[in-house]
Every structure is written in C-alpha cells, then in structure tokens.
Amino acid sequence: MPKRKKTQKAGKKENNGGSVLPKGYRLLRLKLSENTEAVRCLYFKRHVSSSSDGQEDHRPTLFVTNIPSNFDFQNVTNLFSLYGDVEAVEFVENLYFPGVSAEKPRSARVVFENGEAIEKIMSVSEKDVVAPYEPPNLATGIKKYLMEYKRERPDTEKLQMQVDRFMEAFDVRAKEEKGNLEVKEVDEDGFELVKRKSRKMRGSVAPKITEIKQKKRKEPVVNFYRDQKRLQQAKKLALLRQKFEEDRQRIAEMRQNRKFKPY
Picture 1 (cartoon, rainbow, N blue to C red):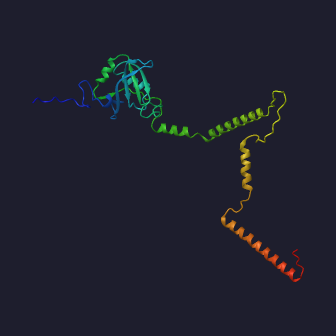
Picture 2: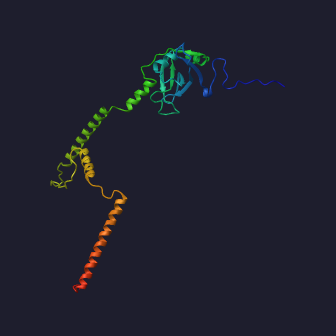
Picture 3: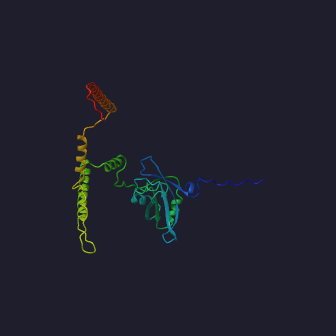
C-alpha cells in the first residue's frame, strides 16, 4: 500500500518566507533599536481593491495593521523603504472598532513604486527588523493623558469669560427680537394693526430669577412638619369647642331670664 504524502498544514513556514496566519496575514517583528529587547508585531498581506471608478487598482499595495500608535507617516515610510521605494502611505480606519482609530489609525495601505518590493517583503523571514525610528512631535504616555485631562477641564476664569460672552450675545439677541416685535405692522388697506402689549422681562434673565429666589426665601414656611399641622388642627378644634360652650351657656342664661326669642 503506497504511503500518503504529508500535506503542509496552515500556519507552517513556507519555503519563501515566514508563516502564513489566518486570512493570509504574515508577521513582521519590529524593533525600534538594536539595544532594546521589546518587539512589536506588525501583520501585513497583499492588498487588492477596486478604485473609485469600479476598476481594480493594480498598484503594488500592502495592507499593514497593528501599527504602533506613535508611528506617523514618516516612520511607516522609513520602515517599508527597507524593501523598496514607497509611493504613498494611506492610513485607514479600523473596521472592527469604527470611530476609535479615526484620530490615530492603527492600519495603513502602503503603496510601492514597483511590485518587486511586494515580493521581497512577502518572502521576509520571522527575524527581528530594526527600522529607523524618528519620535514624532506628539505627547505620549502620562503626558498625553495629562493634556487630555486639562483640555476637558478648562480654567475657571476662562470658563467664566465664555459664559459672560454667551450671556451678552443672548441679551443682544433678546433686544433685537423685542425690537422686531415692536415694529408697527400695516394691513393691506393701510391701517395700522393694534396689538395687545405683552409684559416681557427686560434685560437679562438672571436678575429676575435671583429676585424670585430671594422672594421665596423671605416667605415663612407654614406647617413644614407633620406634627405642626396636627397641633394647629388641635388648636382649631379647641377654639371651636370653647366657642360652642360659651354659646350654649349664653342661651341657657337667656332662657332662665325669659329673654330667649328664637323667632
């Protein structure tokens, strides 16, 4: 019985380069300097897409993902220039997390001037690649989070200035609207239309609100607690009983004196 030939499983190393990962991705191990032990793994594959007019884009293009967040256009160009002349670098948004990577994309399309660069990088082995790295003029680490924290929490004086400008603009708009309403309207026959004058607040709204609050504070609070309400009701009942007793005694005295005349 003849022996079966062993088929090559997915994930094994090919003869012309590194291992092939799911969806055709390959691995590129990146080191920012020879003195560091830290390695960043980038994943890339050959990119084929259609252009805006519906035709296929035959430019030699590589799709790269998991790009470091501190890599800008120049750093990506320097990295892939090791394999050939780079024509363009197009950062793209992450499809799995839309909107998250819009500010700092983690994926890009690298367009080469010729296809030899694609064949060269597709045959690269899984050895560490040291790329020329230029730190971008961007805040990273704790500096980045401090800048975002300060940006989201402006200074009190600046915030007060913004509020004052907003209120001034609001007062100007309110006066303009009031002036437009007070313009005399004339009907088709040339007679002036008489309208009922509406009482509206003049000036800013803030002083009126403060006046209402102060007025409410001056008003005494009656029957705030439940016990106070019960005590007040008991006093009213006692006064009614006292008045009833006084009236009953007065009627009895009038009967004794024969002065009681109900009719």
